[in-house]
Image 1 (cartoon, rainbow, N blue to C red):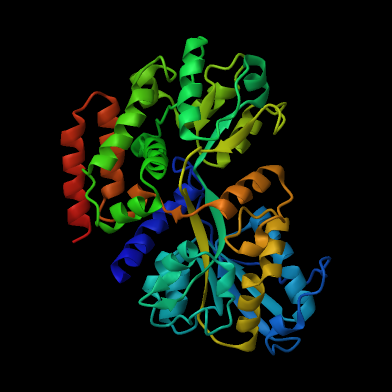
Image 2 (tube, helix red, strand yellow; image 1 turned 90 degrees about the vertical axis):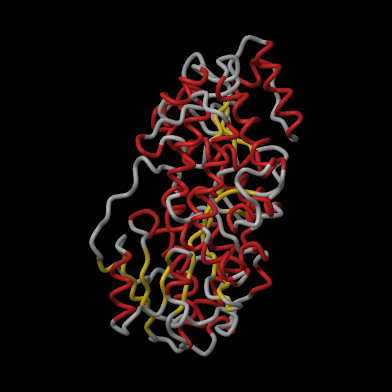
Length: 442
């Protein structure tokens, strides 16, 4: 089990960049800056007194995280009821440079709390404080969210923020005009695709060009197909090496993807379009006038990109999404809270964010999704309500395969998918990838 979570940890460093789902445009690194202390009064109902866990008004709590700008404002909104109820003074610091956290830990002066990547749970295992001993409400988290944060039997990371990628974007107004309905099963999706073809429409826009990362959208699509055909445990077994990458289930998913990604009947430009059309342009083709395709399988950021490209579009009318029908689990990423000290203030923060109140307040702040079960039913932004429902009802949550398996597997997978779409022999491609997988997991 330790090996599985170490592998999850190593790869999810990259997965978080992809969790923004825009590997072609990563955020620029910024120097560490002091963030303002949270002093906003609570507008929500008071936090339960016992969540303060004995912390006294005026107690200080140092924090380090990667968020800034609007994200930091949303975090402050989430923490305001906690600050108001307990009187704790937050001392936050924002940086995108993980080396700063390493330096602080190595110097013996880590922050009380860090919101960082799952990889650091393994890296700092010996100095982190277990969440359950700090008073975290473990019952508010599904096991598939607690497991990646557990190292050698110790629950070291609290998942605080998540995003999902197992979704398909479309235009409700176009669907209505053409008589199409949103599918609720994979069989219905398959039939919808064929109905679109019969109607003279191109079902998919599957362009995946992204420079050196060309192939990553194909990787996401194939993994979602695996979640439909095989389920989340199968994906986790590929990541751990329990299932070889040349397994029949992998081949089945590739063939399903290949049918749609290579044929101009099913996707814009056929194989060459898939290889040469940029992943952002692939999104725009669904929302052009007239639409060049009916659907694009893409992560949550696609809606924002469509709105920027076509500012007159209205969410819910002109652009919207649905969860991949038939998926037995979701693909996505998460951010984790870890504690380096055990003080009343730390316990208070852990108790608050893991409580149902903390989950509800995270949802109300619209800071992506919360794995906390208390978030269910409390999202206020339309797209997050739908994503939150999908997250609440899922039976599994899996990281990206290509970015989670170490040893350069992700790059090899991207190239393999590109080679396959370009007409390469699938059996040979998967056999070579299985060798890379085995070497990476030795």
